[in-house]
Image 1 (cartoon, rainbow, N blue to C red):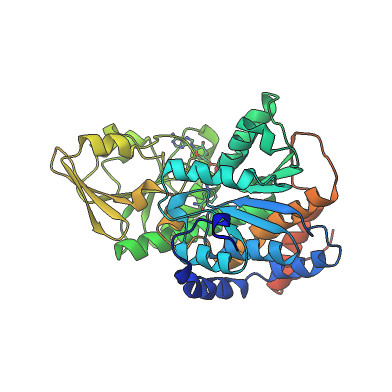
Image 2 (image 1 turned 180 degrees about the horizontal axis):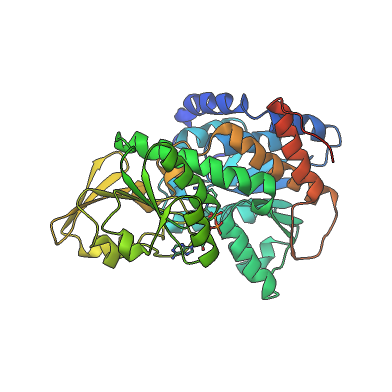
Length: 403
Ligand code: NAI
């Protein structure tokens, strides 16, 4: 591939990336069976497909499947903090156009989106809504776009806003809202991988600790259930009265973030909203408290104000920053407030992403075989949602009764 067709950190990292991708490929049987199903009809042949998604081994495997189906593939990370440079190198070796580097600046990040979109994509996989936003600002790049498949809650919320304002210019599928996606990936996937990342980074025990989970949506439910399972004392904070009551009935203590601030040993945000943990809360926390974010963007904890007011900040361990506050307390921020399970770990389990990416591949196929559709937000077709879940049940060796 010509050197202007990719931007990565170091091509020599490819062998390590290949091992990571080979491993996850073994645990994605539903995606592998879809490859067998879609390769005959040839809908992907010579199509241009872009992915703007956390760039690690599972996403790389999705990109390779799309390429094997005959498409030309461009990929960048939806968050430079989650990019695995070994994986990007392995993808370039396989002929995928990659524009991503771990820790890329905001300027570099947006320039990557442009480098991809100017090649006039047919279908786009988005994760968080940034490439969709860029496409709306630069409609000259969108003339061939048949549709956008959105992976996560934050991106779907942005699409819903565009759709209800009548400003959505392309058909878009809310992949996140498929039952086979959010019921498993957001809940069990994030639930497990958030704690895998935190325990790995801190090397600390969770049993007996007080864990405060901010937001009791699908991600918050998974993170708190797993914390409870490990023996933590879990507190939930919410703004939605139904979710708050649901958390109470699930056996958790529920209170405001101001009340929870002095109690927590670990604070995990899972809302998709800006600055849900602010300086006024951090100043009430006890010395040694940990802050982490499981939401899509790194804005849920107000780290900017923390940086401005703290007496000092130093990296004390891989992905752990220690802030000394004016009151002398030490506060630890994990993965710089970025998406903890990916920026500070390996992301979701491969066999969970098998379902999410099977929905993605099926939705790409849907756009490629449906011709031009209306520019509106649509649901994942019921037959796709059901097919992926039934395939997964089959993989697990489970039969269920019929009505
Ligand atoms: P959701 O919409 O099901 O839940 C969000 C919850 O946060 C809602 O119950 C809402 O009432 C609550 N909330 C909003 N503002 C709050 C505040 N100030 N204080 C307390 N609670 C508040 O969304 P979901 O699916 O749980 O996703 C949450 C975030 O996680 C999104 O940014 C999503 O994109 C991201 N996500 C991250 C994953 C990961 O791998 N880490 C996987 C899937 C989603």
